[in-house]
Image 1 (tube, rainbow over the protein chains, first blue to last red):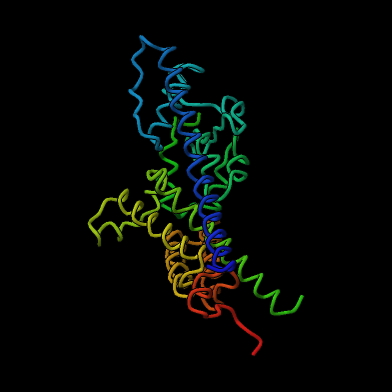
Image 2: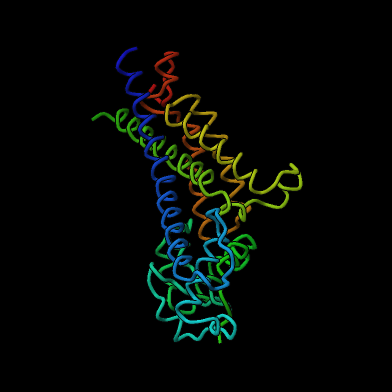
Length: 157
Length: 137
């Protein structure tokens, strides 16, 4: 093999490896942190009848985890009666991102780093009413609405 | 640096960058399938009879294979055109949203790579002696 072939192989392997670790690595870390969070929540709330946390790392478990967080932070009352913009405004960061979209409240914390359009566009609507920006970008997309539905946590009062 | 060298470097960077993009999305689909199932169009589920999750896995696997071929510079032209058409169809199904418009740009860049060839460091060029880049002649 000459040096040009070796160079081609090395470049190909490097690109594949970097892509693998940047995609799989991020999710693996996020999966691990969700699992740890579930474990901690489970330990702290041993005798309470919260919804069972699913083992897979998908939208559903993330929502369940969030629901547990809501119950701890603000009580079931917030979920049943809804959220005010004042309550939402305190969740205005990448570590806790709530947004009101078309009268419904969503916990987008887990979506911040997964949004295909970049994290900045999600961070822009954390802690506020993001209806205007969402409708501008995604109003006609049923698929996006389906994804958003997975993060629903209550209604806006 | 000659004009031809600049073109070769540019095309090589384009190939590697696009290979990375397709590989990243392919690996992402395998690592977190459920995050992508909402993007699977209903007609694809109806035609194939497969679940959305399985379609995402298959799509991710195909993107990893095609992205790897791009990274190594194997059959660059045909792979780039196929990937470009594939991404263009996805972009059309997403619609004229921020994501859709970005994907249309990426798909056209991929198709452009299909017309230009692989640039430098391609396996096809090394193994078959073919030059996958436009020349001055």
